[in-house]
Image 1 (cartoon, one colour):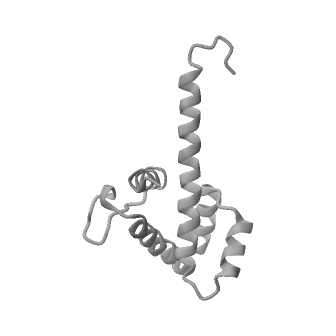
Image 2 (cartoon, one colour):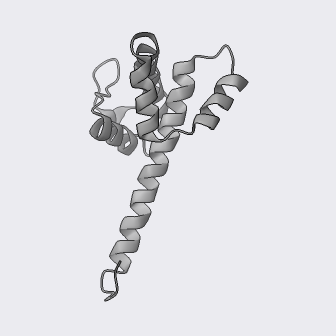
Length: 115
């Protein structure tokens, strides 16, 4: 997983300022640090604006069934951290899909029939 790409995508799409505790640029974040930053943001939403969290999860397209299952299977664990993992996984899937379609578009650029 390219953490720099994932952090940049999350920042760009959702307007999140994702920097490490020392203020390091997202390029220097590790996967664990990114997960911690997201978990912190998610926990704040859980406490202060649960409706905004639900909207965010819907916007990111996190599977509700998967989320419920993960929360049920991991009772006692930090919910923000579990949700952060799902967000990272889903956003990475989106990045890979965009990458794949860009490659397909570039390969077929000369085709006459395009939809």
